[in-house]
Image (cartoon, helix red, strand yellow):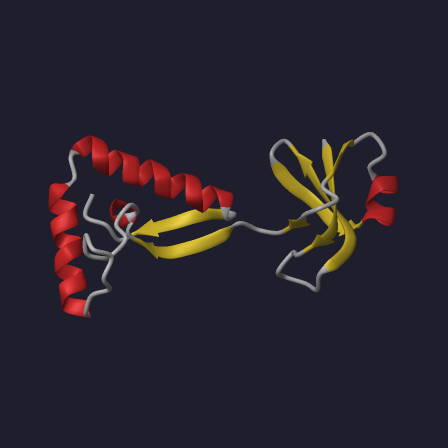
Length: 127
C-alpha cells in the first residue's frame, strides 16, 4: 500500500483537497482525502511526498494527429500558409514519411503527451 501526498489533490468528483493523500493498493485507488486523516488511518502505507505537484486524473486528448507530430505547417522559407495550402503541405508531408519517419512522429508525440499528463488519446491519423 502506498500513500501519495501533495499540496493539492484534484479528485474532479469533489472540491480540491489541500494537503491531500491518495492511497493506492494493488494498483487501485482505495481512498482520497486530507493527509491528517488518511495518514493516521493507513499508518503502514509506504509514503511518497510530491511537495511540488498536484495529483489529479490523467488528461484526455480526444483528437490528435500523431503522424503530423514533426510537421510545422510552414514553407521551407518559414512563411505561414493559407488553410488549403497548409492542408496540401500536410498531405504531402504524410506521403513523404517513411515507415521509420512515421514511427518517429508517433514516438515523439507519445513522449510529449506523457510529459503533459495525458493518459488517454484518440488519434485521428491515417495509421
